[in-house]
Each structure stands twice: as structure tokens, then as C-alpha cells.
Length: 263
Image (tube, rainbow, N blue to C red):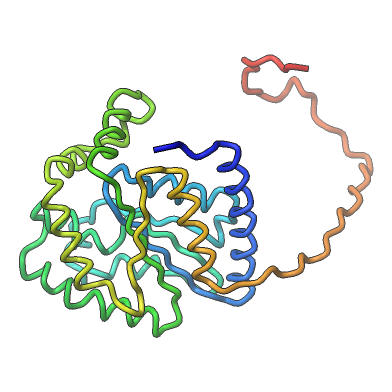
């Protein structure tokens, strides 16, 4: 497969990120509530897409939710309860890096939930999502699809790169071993939760750069918005010193200057 030209990729990404800023301002101005769910195979590139989406955005408007393993207390709650706590208020965008769909994926395959709990999720999830949409939340769901061969290549890269090894958890390795089980679980999940009010959008993620561009462009198209005129800004004059005396530089503790300037 021919690789995407780097200059083209960087130019397109910059343009899309500018549009994301405009979308952010529209969401804030209109008081929209946006939820974007990112699911898919391990090493499919979800994190990379999320990083490019949030790179230029205001973290007070657009935030990422990546929940850890539930606590003993959370295990006794209604299953969706800990996710509800992170839903957006007006003027906010929430990106779920993994979501309530853990119940249909890792919980199902690894046996972290019982059969009755799993079946209850399949019954409840569509109604839960319809309820979110009826409440005014814009709900968009992405599934990142990656081939067996490409996942193998990315796992090997992570094993060999000390800066990436942290991305390979024991659960990731086990998911590789249970590839077919996860495929069956994904198919059943789609069969129950690919609903008209909140359909699944599949992202072909074998090429990371293409996946990023395609996903961001689709996200922009999924939420009607328009460019708002920027508020006028004028840099005020600095306050006069009025006798202020700066303390001696020698009284401060500086970070050691290990790198010399190129100038």
C-alpha cells in the first residue's frame, strides 16, 4: 500500500484542526452537548486520532475520558452510572477513549461479567443511547478496524521501542491471542447497538494517517456548524512600574540550562 505523502497529510491535518477550533466555538456558542465514542481493536490508532483532535482545542471545552478499571464500589453501581458522571454539560465536547462498550468487548471475552449482565447490557445499551439523544446530546460512535497483519506489525513495533512498550498491557497481549473471540463479540455488539439514532461509523485504520484525516473530516461533517466572527481583541498597554523593584535574579532558583541556543 502506497503511503500518504507527509506534506499533504500535515497540510490537510492543519486545515482540519482549524475547522475543529471553529466547531469548538460553535459548540460553546450554541450550548451543544457532544459525545464521541472511540472503540476498536488494540493498536488500531484511537489514541492518535484523539490526540490530533484535541491538540488545538481548549481543554475546558473538549476533554478526554479514559476510565481506569472500576473500583469495588463502582462494580456495585448501575453499569452506566460511572459513565453518566462524565457526560457533557452545555457547550462541552467529551471524547470517550473506550466507553461503556467495555461490557460488550473485554468484559465479555475475558469473563469479567456474567452472561446475565452481558445480555442486560445488550438490551439496555440501545435504550440508554436513545435516551442520551432525546436529552439533546449529539452522540457519535467510531469503531477503528485494523487487519490481523497490521495489528501484528504494530505490536512488534511496540515491543521493540522502549518509548512505546508501555502501550502493551497484559490485556492487549491476551486480546491478540483471542482475536477471533473479539471478532465474534464485536459482530454481536454491532447487531444490537448499531441503531438509527446512534449508528456505528467504521474507520479503516490500517493506515494511521488516513484514518486520522478521514475520522476528523467525518466528525466535522456530523455536526452542522458555521464559522463565527471572532470577537475583537486589542492588547492593552502594560501597567506602569509605579516604583516596582524586581527582586534580584540571584534570589531565584532556575532550571539548569543544559541546551545551548542556536543563535
